[in-house]
Image 1 (cartoon, helix red, strand yellow):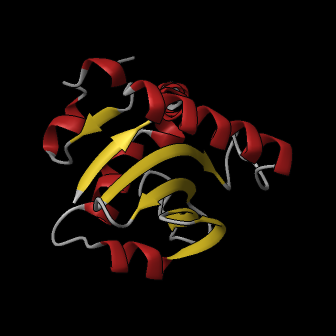
Image 2 (tube, rainbow, N blue to C red):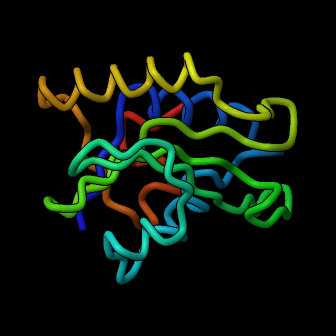
Length: 146
């Protein structure tokens, strides 16, 4: 399984990591959900389908927040594009359900903009690869540094 992120996702992570008391482990929390033996079927099974466009499915997945000691219900919402045929998962947006940066949901207009940006970045080949592991938590990836 290959993982990528959009530029909007990288901005989301950067903003959340500015609040370490609430969202300091956001990358590790996401990594915990997608590390190990992750298959397209397991990702599709844990997400709520937002849009089905032939081979690409847009999902919303719940992820726990260990910093605030919240499980999946009160943690983060992660919007991903699952390209099942290529076994690729693209992280599009992440937002917390609780805390100072909390959002109730992504409005439909915001979702449309997110999907349009995804198509543009996919066409340009500008999606960034992600490898889950301890280096994400330590911030060694340049695009995730504060």
